[in-house]
Length: 251
Ligand SMILES: Cc1cc2nc3c(=O)[nH]c(=O)nc-3n(C[C@H](O)[C@H](O)[C@H](O)COP(=O)(O)O)c2cc1C
Image (cartoon, rainbow, N blue to C red):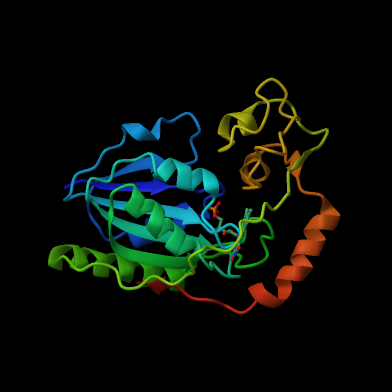
């Protein structure tokens, strides 16, 4: 039996939550980076006894489309999947059911589904510092429950969400590039969508950009940023729906 995590985590929050979930597993865990545009995901084929954590952030209550496409290239072959959706304390809506459908289409059986909260990657003051110690303890206990389910052959309960899914809304928040850009190329190399020109990091293709905020988060010069007025507008809009603390869920 092999343990694997397949994670789409442009700014690290999803990855941090998965670390807590798997913290008590005491097993060597293989990792597959779903943000890596250079990987041919059809090379991954699992076996029925394997356990695979498939983790994505919620974007507008949906699975980021690049992640869904990459997951469906993998061959599950009846392996056990733990679905993880991480969101920025607003709502995750249809993300988990969409992830369930993508994982089943790829040939996985669903052992568990988890929703948890991490810092909002667009407006970082929401859910700042999460997953925090309380989240980490809950996620670690879920990890144990998942191992127990694996032992007993129990599958996930009903996963919340609607089909058809809510309409995917492009955020349209393509980062801008300031004069501090040194053309180091890090953002172009690490862009999950391949949207940044490798020969000119200041050129971002808005039709490819998924507004994941990786370039904003990793630029050593802080040269990538969002339009301040739009960011302020989004921040004000999220104020009402993001402030009250939401908690982790296991299905
Ligand atoms: C384009 C985009 C859309 C998002 N949509 C939602 C959302 O609908 N609900 C929510 O609670 N958080 C939303 N978030 C916040 C992320 O789900 C959250 O910050 C997550 O932790 C990001 O994962 P990462 O740190 O692994 O990149 C969104 C973030 C981005 C970049």
